[in-house]
Length: 588
Ligand code: FEO
Ligand code: CA
Ligand code: CA
Ligand code: CA
Image (cartoon, rainbow, N blue to C red; front, side):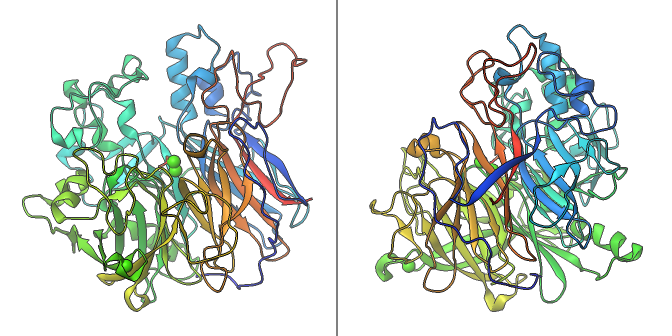
């Protein structure tokens, strides 16, 4: 449930968009930004300082990983002076990370260690100050592509999960391509395993592989040359790709805990998962499958949240996502004669009470090959649903459909009311309104809050707001401030509009509903990820992960120098290129 709604302290004059090659962080007048933690910063006790020209698996395992994505700053004391930073590390940009000629096996081993997640303790003197990270702090943790995870839920132990290394199908090494996520009311972090197909060589001859993009041409990283399990054509590892594409749950307060992959929540290219507690206590998670023409999903826990922090309540709540019903969204338009993209919708059941609801598929098959189950159920093909997140102030759910340049192409589905544009390069944001405010019912209403693009361009829509708005393209991650304003970060503006990616505030209620206002820009090549907005209790800060700064450049020819802007006078061995980092923006 939301905290005390107060007046948002984050008042600002919108910043102008910046051209795509601008290598700086743009913030509103009166605000400043600081770096909290960067790729390569030592996290664990004994980890060496960052030295880009001498990277090893061991050093990377003790340092903050690459390409930070999902982010949360979880305060751990009442004064607001201690916190846990939790971040995903989605993937690696080897061409920027390593000097040419680096031993290929070293490249793979460092890349494996630079994927995953980080937990880092933070401190500051008082609320509103900049946070600093504490190297070697007790709760600091690195989770990598080698960290043991346990499977739970209906597929645990299934033949579909068994490999030569794990003949019982109950544990797996590592998590991969962790994109967005969400923090649960019981204090854990959920993280989505997204484009896991790219790490595997697979035959791709079975639709159960090809529907997930697994095939012989996907494996550009050559990880199979270092670890056989990434070769899914090898007899003992045919099922290894089934062991990725899940929602994982991590307890950031217990560095010795074994993280879990929740099979009850289905397997697809999970952008992330965000939880709301329904009025009756059931926990409901909303999830997107980020692929062109893929789906929006909902998971309803069988058990109810137990209140309080007793060890018993905690144990109970840690099992909430292990058992429940999975469904997929069907959006039905009511016609465009009314001048707006809107209509009703239904959650189509895929599993219920521990049984498959899809003809011809077992429960295990529905959960491992969830995309095929949703195809059969007749779900609505969306324009790349990324973050799907409930707004705790109004109880509505917001879906960022980032873009879909294939809509309307030969052989592909054309425009529909919920995805109204052909060759959709700018994306849109869907608002879903649960029937009677109950997140467990089958029915909902929906409308498009935003049809993104440059204001004035045909087909754009800004929630009905008639005044000036900032141009916005490719919505990806969403967050909410304390009064329920939507904050949207983007991924892809450099390609779609030749502008840097950015973060925007969008009121969803009142006369300013739909008024898009740009809060910041990230530097050249970067994507804005994991926004966290803190605007109560004397706090006025926005945090973002700056992912893949300098994308498109190389070690020898960097196109960004964020965040340190080290110039030609750097000492020997000092890295002059970009470093993915978490930054904090606050009042100057
Ligand atoms: Fe990793 Fe869908 O963004
Ligand atoms: Ca309509
Ligand atoms: Ca994303
Ligand atoms: Ca993205």
